[in-house]
Length: 256
Image 1 (cartoon, rainbow, N blue to C red):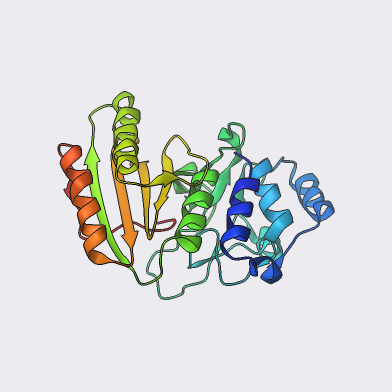
Image 2 (spheres, rainbow, N blue to C red; image 1 turned 135 degrees about the vertical axis):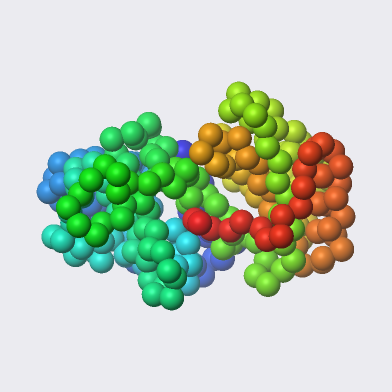
């Protein structure tokens, strides 16, 4: 998926947003690729060209992550991991967290524009055992965080629902059933749907549908809105239409 639809969505929702963005020149990106002997995914390059050196109050990899391209380059001299395969796309800026979980592109498994994200616990000489799956791709994380930042109402009521299937082959049908149920309740898809992430909106209500987990067999639905009664009613209607759906204690947001 191209970054262009996400960028257009951000500009539509906040016309003043572009003024706070700091782009990265393409020649700087090309120099980085040449230095490391790699090719960065097109969606990531497009994001860098639009806002790779700063995006104001919106953090594209989560509120605790800073994606400043030049700050990332400064850390490369100290990298112990193979920089021709893994490229860190954000730095954790919240020192209060017990675990540092910064996202890296795994370019060795890139498939078109949907590059898997991993995290690396870089405490000594590199070992493949230091690489851990984040179970999300670049485009999935960008889509989720753009949706959360630009559509889901800040401070609004959020209800999380979950369901699961036994086999990855069954997961698309469960996802489609959840999306169809939300559509019958008046919500519509507002960003290009991905295999594991679908974003919907209807009036003052938004919903994020995601397949996650090691095998992509767990369905998570976050329903958000300013009117708690409306959010609760939609959540109950979705759960009633999807047998086995349960309510979570807290909805899942952002990268984590």
